Length: 178
Image (cartoon, rainbow, N blue to C red; front, top):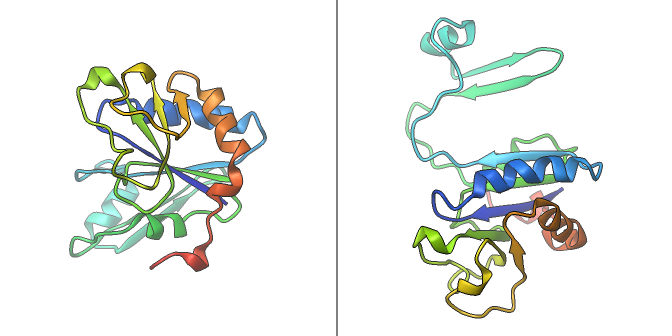
């Protein structure tokens, strides 16, 4: 499997880029999974549903499945700081690409998503894991770079970059901490 991260400040366009990359990679015959970092308490279940009731009753894990979908919900009794590597290990092994949104401080190779209009600083100058920058304002990068600069609004070009450089993104579970 190949793994690439997308890092940037809130509002930079990470989710939109990942959303557009999924079909761009699928059109190339590739199976894609996504790992998304959530900063706040979140829920994918709803009060009144059987799975919600099971979790509320104290189940550590609830797996719900149909012929089209599987979901695993796990409750932690104490706050757990899972790394991106823990989450990747939970994924189906038959996937071609894992797109990781968030986890900006991880040791994954990543594409920085940056917009000058955000007023936020870039990360590529301090983060050796940033291997390309996706931006809508390449002429406003604060410092020249030898890293590829990709058009944030051209998901096909970003997908081409990933596929053409897929050897760089190969992920091995044996080489990862955890």
